[in-house]
Length: 178
Ligand code: ADP
Image 1 (cartoon, protein in one colour):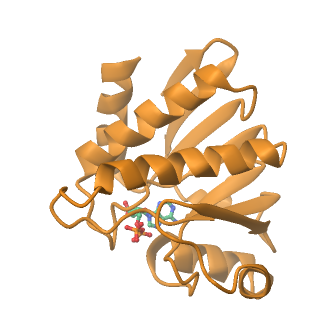
Image 2 (cartoon, rainbow, N blue to C red; image 1 turned 135 degrees about the vertical axis):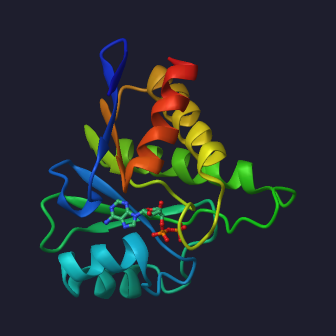
């Protein structure tokens, strides 16, 4: 499923974010950049040890929730990995929606600063961090539409959804906004 915004595109696919041939893929990291399960584990397994060596060397203080940092992509087919940290869901009253929006927006900004034309995101915060999928999907889609409407890069944002539940939630959000 696709939405065109001028000459920009938002695309939804079901699949594995580590396999995307785009300029940058986004990692759902933790604030210590310590590696973990889910997307993070899959990226470091497939990308090899150089990614963690680079985060350790360049970002020893980690990456606070809502911010993003960038590294090379090791053995992955993309050029870069953008590591961002979404919020842990704790009921919605602790600034979770603003932090999730910031994680998407700061990742898109970092992609643009590094001349990335195409970026692939997983659904941030909706695994181990337990953000409700429908609400997270709406934030992901509205933030991407807003960003693409106001900047030259990136030109393509692809959301790579793991399973039909995630795909369905993002498709509903895209239909609502598109
Ligand atoms: P978080 O800690 O931010 O919640 P997770 O990695 O636990 O991050 O999960 C985020 C989302 O990514 C979940 O919806 C999960 O199903 C999905 N996911 C897990 N592995 C992959 C993958 N390889 N590619 C795309 N999505 C994935």
